[in-house]
Image (cartoon, rainbow over all chains, first blue to last red; front, side, top):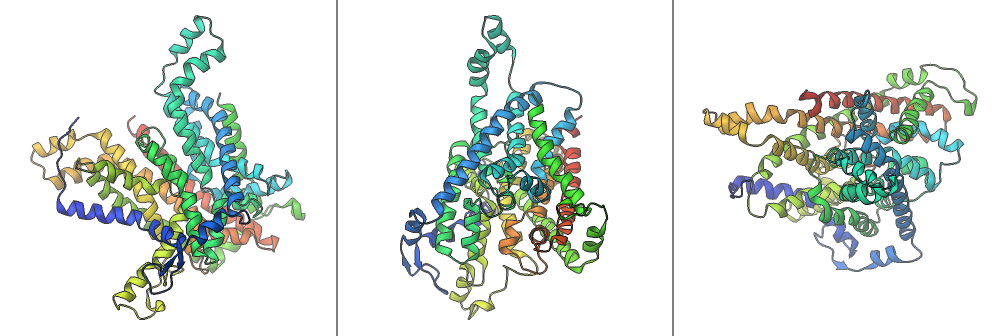
Length: 273
Length: 276
């Protein structure tokens, strides 16, 4: 590997600085609004600051904390189901060659590209009939449309670098299938599985239209609340909710940025967030 | 091993699309309509509301994809070099990857609305004397705010895919070209760019399909008439008049059809298909 620094030209530095500022810029007014008391035109900075929005957000009477719990619960549920169903599927796709594999790969990929609204409008009637519309369970199930394919894609990447011979050795030494999985397979895939699960959690965490359509306004998650406060012009509370809402993603990025290499399927699904 | 996953993908995804298709043909047993017809498609294709909305949505998706791809290509070309502070810059470059679209949309709203940060700066420098003199970039006919949001969000996405591709390709091909007398521009234009093309096209297709079908960003930053297609579909779907439902589903089918074209393109251009 090359280690020498080539250095950047002045023009490159300038464009890089502009680009990074552009990428950070939209987050700044949100942070400022969350701690402002009054910030009227044409003040460039708030004229007075307060933690009013934050105390509202964390008060027991606001809907923010229940929405936070609801969002997290739905995302956790969707992630767990995706892990249970997605790991075996990822193994099959990552380890084995079989007829029709290309078709299945496209079938797994398609839900990540087709916009949620195109699918959810048709599903709505069935969810209504099954009594799932308007319930958190229904929302969790519909979130599987983007989360499960993402998990399968990530796990098939993990398993394509995995050698199943060790399992056979463990089995020949007397391990049960469960023991072989627990002591041999799981440790090998655990890092990929953890990262994949965290990003799957984020995919569900950031869904808007699927929740709105299937939840029918009765399942209030953070993004729905955020949208309502933003269109009602409550900028301070909108700012505070935004800060809470982006926290898991930013924390995750701090831990896992190096896994987003684009070669393991992690990245291709990122646009769903 | 695959069957549970396939069952869910087929049940939810294919099932949702199939039901949407049947519904778009006017089949609604809930209100006693059990015949099939093409009325919904005929109606929307003849309405000015739909056509304007389609054109607007196409403009939003196309413009955002092209601008984001070009800027991402430029960013990737800079970021692949080694320089001091590269890891910090790389982290900052990725930061909005995990920030949900909606948060970015609100941020753009607070920056570019007529009482937003940039309007205040314009006032400070005496460029405008009241908020309404600031050019409309939110709820505007050209959808500038929406496009800015998408460009903001998609630059890191496309950029990282390109960076990964560049790492795989390595520098050797360009080095050979330059040793044979190619200029830096020539080695980029005739060596690196063609090698990057599959990555650029596939990520562009993902972004195009997404920006064509996303609801919350145009719902927050867009004008009422014409509204973006997903917004129009949602409005028709939640209309009290149940007869508008087949039209909503027909619009959903049109969004699905467009993304199907993108998936076809994706499958054709994905690296593993090309290297065969």
